[in-house]
Image 1: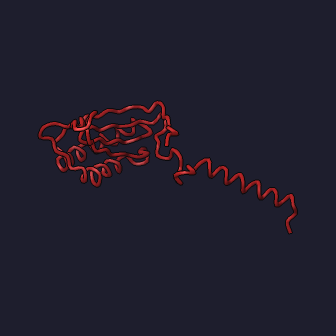
Image 2: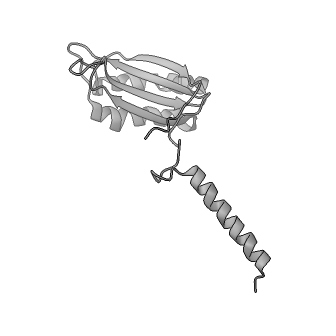
Image 3: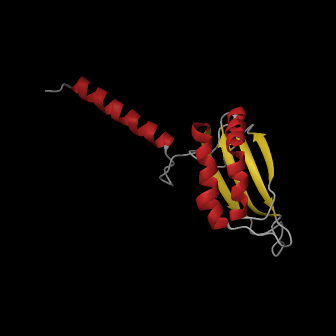
Length: 151
């Protein structure tokens, strides 16, 4: 049989667990807050495919085949990746400057470079399956991540 002191301790533990859960989960969205945000200090590899006359890009192939293939080469160094499809430029009706952009988020840029070097031919030979564009690549270190509370 439980005494009042034991019951109070159990209630405090339960309340603490609920508060911790609410702190980790966005109450209004039902999903973890900031779970998809890159952490400062990691690296983002941006692969940009410039738009232009005669340029072609098979976005479905890029998303379903090319990016997962490259991601598999990066292993545990990869935290996540993203794909974007350009829809317009600065103003409505203006062509997007890039048809597509891909991002790989990695912890160690040297490990990224090693993995890409080991698989360079496979990656480059796959380009013709989805594009005729020579991509521009930039590697950036994420310095600061700021989240908006705007709804």
